[in-house]
Image 1 (tube, rainbow, N blue to C red):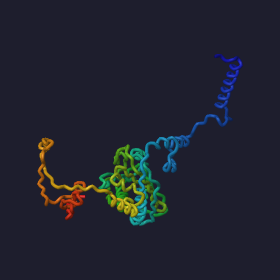
Image 2 (image 1 turned 90 degrees about the horizontal axis):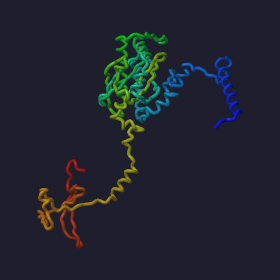
Image 3 (image 1 turned 120 degrees about the vertical axis):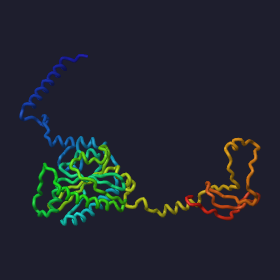
Image 4 (image 1 turned 60 degrees about the vertical axis):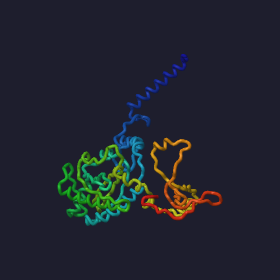
Length: 356
């Protein structure tokens, strides 16, 4: 269907006006709000969710948040949060004794993520301590950042307060620095074992110290893990400690960590116990009176026909066994009462060890 000449003229006029507007917006300095604008790097990072600022550690944004929402959806472990809260209190005291300084420890956040994603996000340089949970037969990871390393070296070697932290980047850590940090790691691991004691006794043993994340792989890169970020403040010095526990490491105590409070599964409900006991007393129980038992070959049983006779070894004086579900309860004598067969109970049958 062809259009009228008036319609064709209108379309041509609109196209010409649109072309003039586009050319004006590209070359003119006083372009309107609809003019094309190039995004700067900060806006691009915000759109993609890769902000480098402090807010990026707390909450993702943009496309990265949409992608990650379907990747890491692991269950919360309420009791684990209580364990780490206990760890903070214990560490504050032990690090004060270790450094002879005023130390404050706090939790930044506790998140679930993939092990491989965390390895790629570790800020270097840093020290990575691999430790083993002996009772659980699995491993965990502790990361000490550069600021914490230089702060602990400074405070243990008698550095004065109020002085700027000395950071020499681009060189490997010296033997003295590694030794001092390793001593602090032993203190933190002992505190972590003590924090888990009310829930489950476990000993976290230091294995090795690495500076390259590739050599500190303690789990599959796709496995889930719990990351706890701790901030250690020593007045004008301090840094971060990060504890990474794979879910595979926590699997032996997973049921305990799912509790809302300590000892939840051992709580007693007297109302429910009373109701259950009353209902059990009203339960119907089927008893079987066994006169005699015989062992017979299967071939003999298969040869039985109508009219075959089975001779029992019981007599009129042989005691009858009363059983419930195959468990002997009483023994008595067979007789009659009011025209019906009856058994008079004479004694209880003692139960053997292992029987219900």
